[in-house]
Amino acid sequence: MPGPLTTVAQESISGRLLVDMGVKNPDFIPTIFSMYKRVSPTISLLDAKGYKSENVNYGSNFLTGGNFRTVTSNHVQYRIAQSDWRTERFRANPSGVTYEDFGNPSYPGLGKNWFYIYLDSNFAGGNEILLLADGVTQLFIIDKTGGEYVSGGVWRYRVKVDGNNKDEYVDPNIMQDGDECQVVSSKYTQDWSTGGNEKHTFGGYGDAYLSLQRFKISYSGTAQAMDKNGGVKGRWVSNGDYKEKAFITEAQDKMMEQMARYADFQILEGKETVSRDTKKVLLTDGEHQEILSGSGIMYSGDGPIEWPLNNGWSKRAVENFLRDADSHVRADETGKRELVMHMHPTAYFNFQMVMADMRVTQDNNIEGSGDNKIINDTYAGYTLGGLTLLVHRSDYMAQRPGKILKDGTKSNEWDAIVFPLGFTNGGQRGIQLIQLRPISKGTVAGIDKGGNMSNDVDGSTEHALIQIGVVSQIQPFKIYRPYKNNLI
Image 1 (spheres, rainbow, N blue to C red):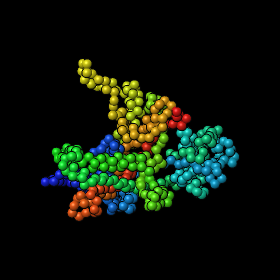
Image 2: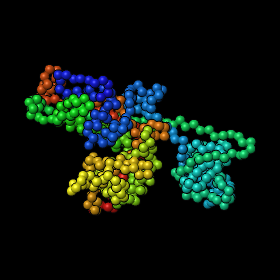
Image 3: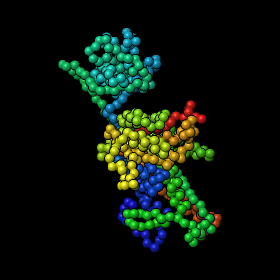
Image 4: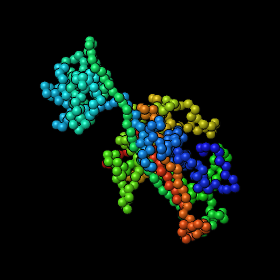
């Protein structure tokens, strides 16, 4: 627990007291949920690695040197560092074209003649070099002023094909709407050159909204009396650090477990209900009340890259996936580049079999001796090509809905949710759990409690409320087996 050791004397530790003591600081919420790793694997992992905010409160702002600014009680803004390696894209002008070469419309740039291109920003400047998506073609921006604004977020540039080959031209297929290019260098005259390129990358801000969830348990006065008489058995939860034990009834424990499971889903796969354009809440309940909710890891930013796994895992599939994922994984403070893989048990077993066939390691995989020897080819992770895979067999994934395929398996059996850990370009953690308030927990007491009652019912209800969110600036992946044209 944060702070000094607290001793409770002459009082049994109840679920209420456990929460009150443990959650003086809301940042402690993930640690509470880590008690239920089976149903909250994502929160448990992020908590263990320290991927959570610290001391964020209603007064947090950027001026005090932090990465978060509290806007409202359920809205936090965070810094987004700008990458120096900017990528521009070709965009169609009002006439619907992405380039114009009036002399050679089919062979743009032929003969070292200038032509127009249209991009989505003015980041590129005069005398700079643009590398196109083929990785070979380079264009020189001939005007010192750079690009000229057209309309609708489109800039026009005059360019020439760089190099010493007058017969070289640009393949129109790499200048289509959305095709990428990048500023990579510059060139100036050798004598009496003037001007220069000036760029300031201040980054921007992102919005994270916290999601609120509520839970309750109810029990009659008779049930409570039976519990006091030892008729209802609970279970013991031990705090190993201080050798103290606390008794939590089964119902209270199940409520906490459900809280952990719901929170984990929201953190991983929750969908935002706030319009990014208008900042208005788009989801309402039956009474027309706004339901505000933030994005989970999978749906922050542009959402996951969908990666179809048509025939299960194979060596080729592993190689292809690692190749596609590699550029999206950055190192953490220790220099490790890690990918978390939550996998359905079927996919997990198949993946382990493939890795064993690849003979990732042949050392120290024999356990026991004599007739009791066991070959252990199950690993919690693999490091290949400088990329560490943290492979997790997910009971949560096993319970997901799916459709029966022709081979008798279900479509969800091949699901995997994958996301990288590590830092952003600006040195922040790519994922951070964030909270502004502690768990709220209380009892609506009936006559069974006696004393000050909320109602005259012979029974009481315990309520719990949590508010939690996540700031995610990473690129997740959704691995799945397509079901269309593959159903029974």
